[in-house]
Length: 195
Ligand SMILES: [Zn+2]
Image: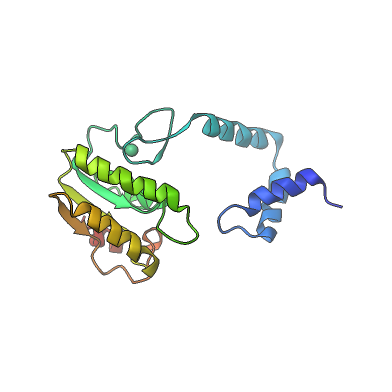
């Protein structure tokens, strides 16, 4: 008989993206074998994260306490460029190139049957508001994945942008079809972004 608490923890791990029941058990056993110092650090960091987590008012990247993230509040960034990405991990991938100096907007996913569409629909409204109110933005870079799943979201985003008089840049082909932003090698991505 498995302890009910263990079961509840396994259920949490099992609900993580791309984690199945077997991996959930492995994570659990790995965690319980770590020393107390590590386990407490893990707990503390997550408590801080949960109690202070915010989403940037401008780009919707997660932030702690502040209304704006480190990128949106950085005056050295180029406020005339806005790069629209589907997922937070796409922003990290582009940021890691250390070449792009503009700002971002995170959609939070794609319009897909298994994604939380409400968040994305809300963000699509926010992007329209942002473009309508932020007159510093002159150029929009659509950095959505080159996947069939992304087509619908891309069309909606393009339609929204077309309402404004903005320069629009799309990722150039060169990114293999079926390519998620986060799995593209840096050189190809830099080229695609025109950096
Ligand atoms: Zn931000």
